[in-house]
Image (cartoon, rainbow, N blue to C red):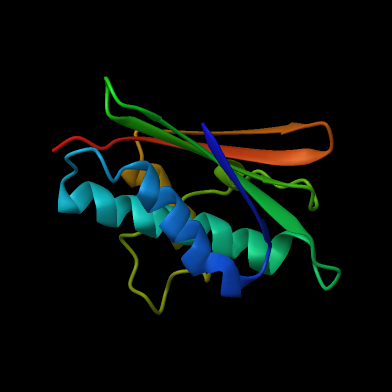
Length: 137
């Protein structure tokens, strides 16, 4: 298990992506799985950076664990911002045209559709959002 603590600012996204990608460097991954992982990590971290703390700012802790035998990567995003469970947001109606759809919600919808597992809990005054993805080809 590895941890990375960063300021919850969009400028830290490259560090977060590099940290997560390093967790799978010894695993034979499909390009599709890597792209899906990167999109999910970007979506979740940027949401923390934009919405968790407001103007006050704060930190984000990213905890990653690679189970090499099963090639399953688990990444947990932890912040002390306002409590928010993005999984409770209603999925967008993707049958509507872009003009007809409400703004927001598409990113978390993509995360839910591309990760094998995703779950949220609020504990000890912190948001914990975990994604799991089988990374093998």
